Length: 164
Ligand SMILES: CC(C)(COP(=O)(O)OP(=O)(O)OC[C@H]1O[C@@H](n2cnc3c(N)ncnc32)[C@H](O)[C@@H]1OP(=O)(O)O)[C@@H](O)C(=O)NCCC(=O)NCCS
Image 1 (cartoon, rainbow, N blue to C red):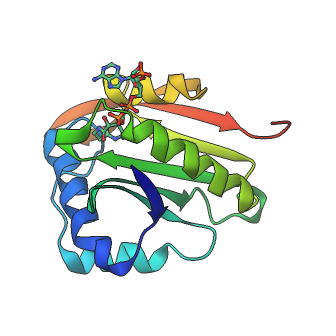
Image 2: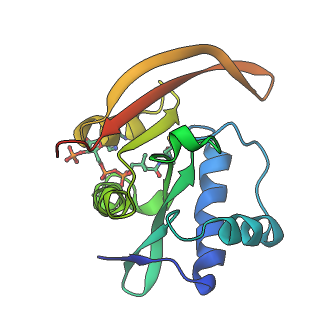
């Protein structure tokens, strides 16, 4: 498996994998699949410190992860938010661990001292990955979002790099 920076040519694969995550209803409050115009805007907004990584196996992109702005406030310039999505056929095989490990290196190299993330308490794959890599549960927002007409709880987790 190769982990590398995403390139514009990866965008269709990234979109396909993201849309699987949206359709599966376990990863995000987004409820509509995304078209290429949306993804291009997303890609263009990830500049400089806000890296996008892809995992490649035998020339095929099987997962991606990104560092996203957490807040526009200057005081939070060292805090990044995280997204990670693995192709349905490649989940549970170590791709997420490899991607997130490298994403953390990129975060440190880009002067982030913390990653925060928002996840569903019911997302077992996500919980497994984050806890394995040392993310701490901060708390759970109750009825934080609405998905398909149902209230959804959202858990915040964090990992600090200071001192590591
Ligand atoms: C969540 C996700 C990114 C994890 O990536 P992955 O490649 O499947 O995870 P890994 O294979 O590296 O597994 C990491 C750890 O998580 C745990 N884990 C993985 N899948 C699991 C599952 N279905 N149930 C419980 N634990 C699981 C395991 O402990 C595993 O560590 P181990 O194999 O060393 O024991 C991936 O499953 C995915 O894309 N899911 C759909 C989208 C999504 O939920 N994104 C996150 C939004 S918050």
